[in-house]
Image (tube, rainbow, N blue to C red):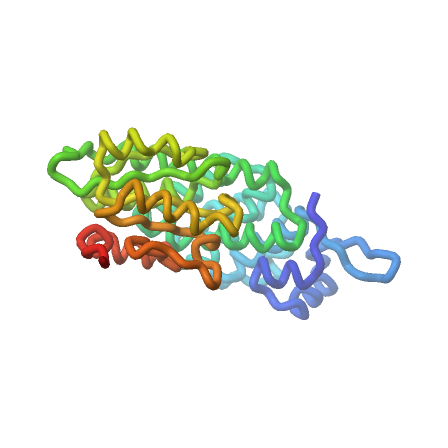
Length: 300
């Protein structure tokens, strides 16, 4: 069970701390415990209830009415109410509340509804990614349960694989070829899976090798597949001091093509990279530059 301060609740829900206190005092909305120093601490149940209340109040319902609902009634009302395709904050709140409750059917329903309304790519960009950013804040606060994060990541991975599998196959001889992989010991796959989907949607041919791929094993693959672009995501691997070494190895594998390094490790200050390396700051930068990445000449 998580333990959240009122500032954590404010950051995760978007509701100001003084409003949370007022709702707590006036409507008995939340029931925090107090430490020996009289500091309020809130549970996962408190955060989930607050997120659901925030979702419904954001649709114009009065707090005095919403606060009377039981947790089950709140959950049902939220599932029935996420009908505004562009109200991303409410969709994110509803998903976060469902994750905290380990409610897999609700998560699936909310993701599917957002996909129906927005399309898969926009669902990922405007709903799934902000949700993952919220979860990152929870990790920093030390309040994230590993099982909750695994549930959400597994569902997103399933949906990315299903969406990609539904796309038509392309002839590698007629399309630019992209080789996507994660370096050795790197397991954070969602960004790379989304890149693979986005490339396929845009008519690019991809070879997806997935997690934990030692660079030394790529030589034969590159010789056979002859990629125009190598793509990898550096979240936790390699060590910060070895990112330049990895980039040089990838340059040797694809000297006449491009190497895309995505992730915080590739953006560290003072890092020197080969001339064929591209480091998108945001996923939207990568998406916007797909054609340019493939066609731009490599500097001498």
